[in-house]
Image 1 (cartoon, rainbow, N blue to C red):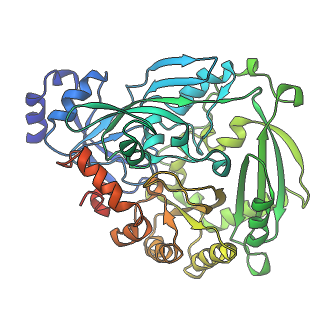
Image 2 (image 1 turned 30 degrees about the vertical axis):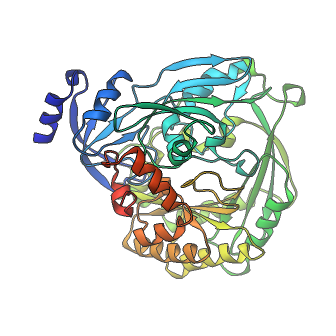
Image 3 (image 1 turned 135 degrees about the vertical axis):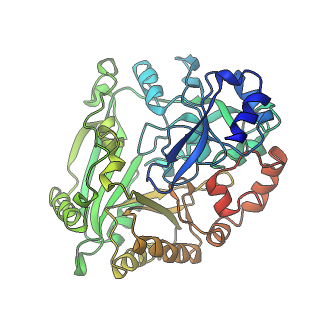
Length: 463
């Protein structure tokens, strides 16, 4: 508590920027850490704070990073109140916001004006700053790239207290070190985005079953749809192991049967999962049954349906606190990308077979096709991304080390935003091509290592 009191005396106006201790975790619930937290009300308070704090801090948006990327024992700057819209040009689709504005907030404003986010992850309840710090991707990465591609410029508050405007042409080194840099260059304060024009609220979706991972990979390669995603059933045994369902979708106009933009209403949140939800409800037997029923819903052809974007992009957002489905022990989401090659389907199959041999089962297995890599520590590589959900058990913790070894040997990498267990050795192997340059830039931005997270400590990111 001595540190908290010292900071409050040292900084002007700290009576409006009080420190509070509370236990925080990422979306997976693992780890949970008691942190000193600060919640600024206005951006002007960040200048004194960035220059004056004595112990390391990290910015935190909506807390949707799954592990320890937005945790710091010595200081977490909660950005939720810095959520103001600054400017929106409805003719050009250029939007300027503070970093605490969520993607959900953006969609509520821009959709009625005929615009959409060009890159949108699996949840819209993430902040703009968090999306850039993670450099999130969506189901259309092969077409639209990652989030940073559509960021016109951003303002980053450095440890010196100086705010610099970064873009692909101005302070471009800081821009690309911040995109995917997990908040370690400084505090992202505001952002300007170029939006995507749309003419309806709907997408045309085609869905088909695939009998194997090899068939799924082929379906990805043959489709020219804007959005593509595959779900894999790895509960089934025998020759059917790795079967799945492939979905592809594209925006349509109102004249093609899409719902008119004028009918848009911000969606209401649905069921709330209580904090005491028993984790035993989700088990390998209930999930195996779910996988069988989902596979049987679809035929071998490509049935067509028109769906609203909410149902296609964010099905889990209907459940508030869906992470509680895993119970008090929490869970891990593991996402890796395997570089494209003629053998990539065999590599993916080997990862899933390893999971089976260890007696562990992911309750969700999702495949996406990634385009070219951009930036320094950004996750995507041209290849296939596999996302898996595991309950928090000792066997799963041991399994992830084995998975990381295989991924590193294949030249792949793990998504830091989803990670809680990666070792420093595996991290340095996975990101070795860009890591020296990233560290050089970050040392220039933050020579005293003011911005630090539990993840950064675990992975030696600033050493």
